[in-house]
Amino acid sequence: MGRRLHFDCFSGVSGDMVLGALVDAGLPLARLRAELKRLKLTGYRLEQREVHRGALHATKVTVVIRRGFTRPLTLSRIQKILAASTLPPVVKEQSRAVFDHLAEAEGLAHRVAKRDVHFHEVGVIDSFIDVVGGVLGCHLLGVTKVTASPVNVGAGTIQTAHGLLPVPGPAVAALAKGIPVYSEGPRCELATPTGMALLRTLVSSFGSMPVLESAQVGYGAGDADPDGWPNVLRVFLADETASAGRSTDRVVQIETNLDDLNPQAYEHVMTQLFDVGALDVALIPVIMKRSRPGVILSCLVSREQTDAVLEVVLQETTALGVRIQELDRQVLPRRFVTVKVTGGSVKMKIGEVGAGWEKATPEYVDCQKLAVRTGRPLKDVMDEARVAYARLAERTNQRKTHS
Image 1 (cartoon, rainbow, N blue to C red):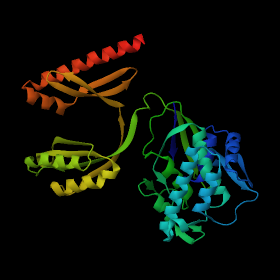
Image 2 (image 1 turned 45 degrees about the vertical axis):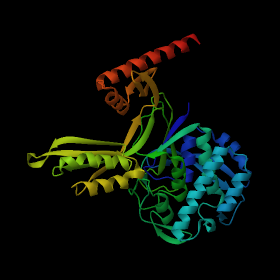
Image 3 (image 1 turned 180 degrees about the horizontal axis):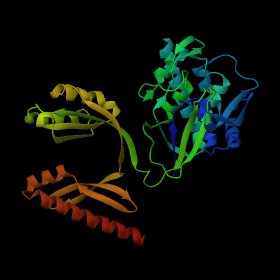
Image 4 (image 1 turned 45 degrees about the horizontal axis):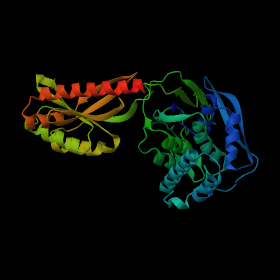
């Protein structure tokens, strides 16, 4: 069973903060050093020390350079170094993805082609080790799922190889597309391009703190130590439990109140919403201002289909605005089984609750079509389908017991 890692980015994120947090959460530095030798790079060493950042104790992992690259690297050179290594394939793939994201962001920021990007901040050996070490560290800890909080990017301005830039810098701003970010705390850079690219590659969803059991907590320190501010990245590491194995995703809820739409239009609106990718649509009766009866039109949708759903709501209804919020959704593992009933067959949707328990529901459309074709009451068709599945499940369990 894998492990789950959650990044709490209340003070941003950087490559060295990721390394420090993973080591603080239980990754042995000696093992990380040994595995990084598979990169076939020399001229550096990893050092670990305990530090304070504000009121928090944290681990600072530093890449100390003895000799190495003194000029920026191109993306092709980085890819050749990774290809020549003996790192696990998944670590190579994810490390390449981090640098691909960085190259795309730098290219957008400086208006050059991705292949022509020369990495200044991330091209020297210390940042190279930060990236590969962060990906490798997650692999060594057995992490199979990574989530993160919204990211605090900091405020003010920063001095870079390209001159003075606002916070977040252009590369961080490009990497933050689709990632929830905010600005709080001291006037300095809190999220670096390297840190954001690691999040963009490793993290499956961003949101509030998930429910975790038996969590180990780690604190990774950044270089900056602003007065009165704990500049650390906090991580939570936990073993996946049976309940955690349920599928969890991030969805968008879109709602609007309607009190002047012709009720005949509701069926059309719902059909249009499902056609453009809505996951669920509900009409909820309410009493609105001045005691007027109305309806809340509520939709669940993936982030990718949000704009399409918004277009339908605003074009096909009388709404002048909508409410939008992101929600975590946990879904039971499910499968479909077809059972035979009088006059045909029906698909059963099976939800696996855990500990051997499950929920079995006949598909309404199948039952409705069968009821129309045979002239039988819909309720009888649905009841027969449930009984048929119960018998099938009992026979399956008996075979497992005897085998």
